[in-house]
Image 1 (tube, rainbow, N blue to C red):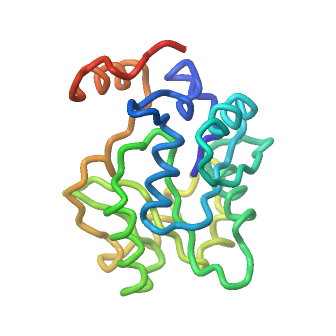
Image 2: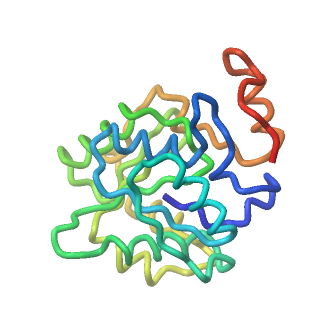
Image 3: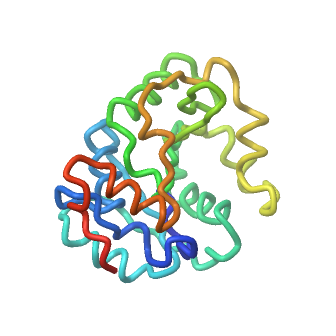
Amino acid sequence: MLAAGRSSRMGRPKAALPLGDGDTFLTRIVRTFRAAGVQDVIVVVGHDAEAIVASFAESDLPARFVMNAAYDRGQLSSLVTGLNAVDRPGVAAVLVTLVDVPLVSAATVRAVLDCYRATKAPVVRPTSASRHGHPLLLDRSLFDVLRRADPAAGAKSVVRAHASPAGDLPIADEGAFTDIDTTGEYERWVSDRPGGGAASTDP
């Protein structure tokens, strides 16, 4: 999971924002991945790393944190940091998601994994019409391609070059496509949820 950026459009670390029911963005995602059967969850941190790790520690959920000291170089640097942390013999692929997509369901995560097992597509991603969501599964064959990718272009050019109909998985789960990236988006989500306002918007 990539959670290393400055959250400049949110104004505070998205990872620690409350979602209600005792969860933050970060704990909700880790809990979802664990429920889907993902045993090794890695969180790439950078800006405000200590505060994010401290907030997460209150949950007692299992996850590994790795530091991307070069987080200002962009999202690709965090992805490569995560790849380096998981890349070992026997690892066939990696699931990637962003901390600002916290509402995806465990069923969607399982569906992405099942699609990969059935097709071995190099890229598996949730789709809905023309939208592409998270989590994204990347086959091991792309690890070095991503390491060599142009930081200015990021991972998108690699994903687009290796996406295929076999790996584009139609998903009805709106959580896979809901990116809560700004204060306005977060406040709208809080007001729209059942019992709106139950999630605190205090820093």
